[in-house]
Image (cartoon, rainbow, N blue to C red):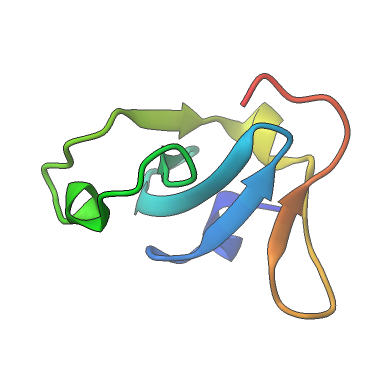
Length: 79
């Protein structure tokens, strides 16, 4: 997938948990990991009370949109 395939607010899964897209750059997508925290108020932002992680073009190439509309990152991932 390309970074333009993402929308702010999209949620997706990786091997490490569930994430929410918070920003889209020229060649990157930025997300917060929402599966590690129970307090939903931490996801109100920006600024966010949790760390934002950058997914670059290489990481985004492994994403795919499933038939139910959700996004997933297959295979091994550092995220």
